[in-house]
Image (cartoon, rainbow, N blue to C red):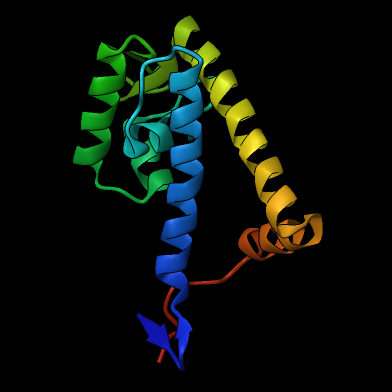
Length: 146
């Protein structure tokens, strides 16, 4: 897909996300850690140390609550997440990492940092920093009001 003969940004961003996810998943596997799906990895990296609700995880990941529930269930079954009552709300539950989950998160973050270094080696530090700045900028609402 192109726009004025250039590749569209949306698919390129998805391809870049997939590159980082694949690099991290492969590195975890090489270190003997069970694999995570891309959705599980995304959910996992959106956790707060003090816990977060499934609704908030879904919002942060841009996925449906049902998808977030399924990913959390799978991660609980894998032993990397646990669910506890939310002390501030009787209706909510918090999702927290287990000790095994914290270790996997530390390894995953190191893997992501290594992937950034590989990218900088291939594209140059300045390109990676420009990319980081562009992606970290406030883009405003997704669709301008007409």
